[in-house]
Length: 302
Length: 195
Image (cartoon, rainbow over all chains, first blue to last red; front, side, top):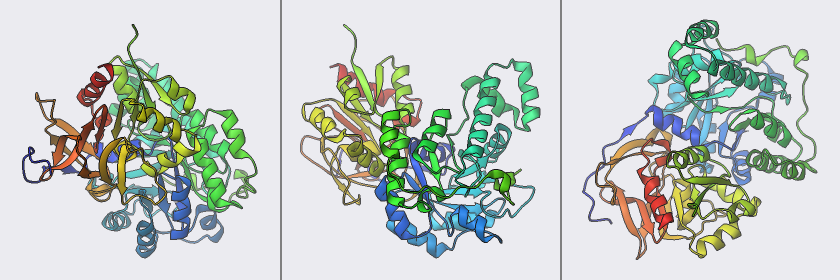
């Protein structure tokens, strides 16, 4: 083709922080949907999802079934990769680096080290610097977010309380993370040491936040989002993209709900559009009161 | 006389990073979500993101036809990665219902380098920027498989596969200049807009 350019293969670097964080930048303003089979993956992509999360059971079913929840069967993940042109993510248990190695070998585009699965290590998270595939991790507050970033996470999401259809915990987590960031931007240099101690987070990351006023990686929202209005709420609070788990495929008309949430994520500040897309969606997923839960997934992670 | 206003298509993707680059260049800019926004801009940047999602959102937000009409009328445009796919004449390996504007006579293959683990950084020689190579970030990047007459190739990888092209005042890159502090690709476009 272009003869004026030199021959040979351009030398390239893969698996860099920039390349890993870059994909998260490209997912901003979109919706990432949980899917359990190729048919759902097609519906998600048809609706305008920016990525799918391939898993065997959506969180509300994991919650109902109990027992140990593990990484999905590779065959199931490959089935979803085969029908998708958008990025495919998959979940590994907290601390289960062997599951993560398997997911990397399958070529998933992002790994979610997720509290929705049963933790494999009660002290350590995965050393995510050791991987060329990027990781997203959940957080309930800024300290947790910064610990995950120091371990190599390239995207942070709120944990929320997955599988409940109740957005209250996600709101708490997003408000806590962004509220503390706002406070840190007004702290003086001596106070930053105290912030690092209180958050149990590395000082350089706290100092970086004081300077930039934001997390060094994108902040997305997950856990309990069930309607277009929920998506608008968390994005107006400062989340940059939404993960929707059980909220789509546990609603009465998944394709319609999926499209409505995609439209809401793009137009999250436009109440007229939100009113239009919220109309006639059928039943949202059945919701749960947080106080009635036997297991709080958000408490998993350290 | 006030300078041109450059729009950034703000349906999804790396919108903020392009706006930030324009701010650093001192160029007035506006996020474009609907036809009213579009009418207020002199040029449009199509950011990186997911081209399938953006293609759907262009239709949902009633922007596809207005944008197509402006491009037809010669509005300058700059597309990066997904933006390049949206501006191309033909998309290979896209979805059957995926729409593109045909504003530049190239055929583009989606995800041509493979999955995310194959995403990479590389130094590229770019025509018109002789002082130093451009450090380029390719993320699940597309590649140009056919270049029509009248399309200028600005940069290439691996034995000449084009990754940056220009035709008239439409410029496209497979990579993401918005992820790098180097402003020269944006500058190249803005100079074209001002001309």
